[in-house]
Length: 148
Length: 149
Image (cartoon, rainbow over all chains, first blue to last red; front, side):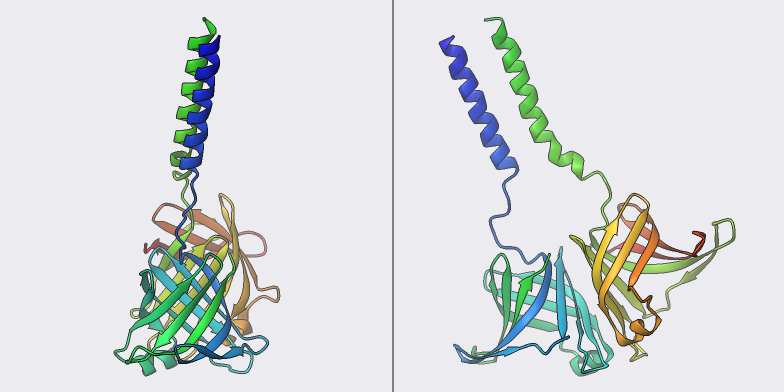
């Protein structure tokens, strides 16, 4: 009977290990999901100098899924909405978006500029996309919270 | 010792069962993903397709569904009137319900007061149709999408 107990214990261990490995969640943070803008930061090149909060009713949401990005904005003080659609990829430190189409105003403003590279600070429940100037200085960021 | 082979068998079955489950889940088509409008159908009184209308050229309408959230946008190259919406969705085998949180100004003018749309859903792996029904439940028109991702 001693063998039996040992065997049962071993099997139990096996099953537990298997259960843990097969249901193992992604341990890397992922961009996939739906995110809502919470605030903006201004930078002095490196550090945050200023936090700008959103006016009531202003909502900007971005959805990232399987390489596609879509975003839209509603602002009660502006009858013109904003939106865009395209593709994205991320590295450890960067978010790269390529816009395929957007609202009329943006399409006119963009002309050939369709690629946006931001510095990316990503956690499970928040992310910031930081605009970097040509010299590599931080200028401005949009800060999002996961809402799904 | 007779119990032992039986126990081993049982353990084996348990292990096999736990490693099979994840695959089975993926065989049901899911609306999660990115979809682009291809064309529209009109329906006759019997609920059959009477007419197919292509999307205008240059015009793009894309919807993203993920984890209960839906966003759609429409790009019309020659028009500054904007069309987009964002909200949540629920699907069943045959229905799609979208409830928008916000939408473009132009869309607000024609939207239901509760900003909710209840539609018939025909979903396959790589295409789906959302069919608009009249108050009696008769099919009127549909938007037909293909999967982009």
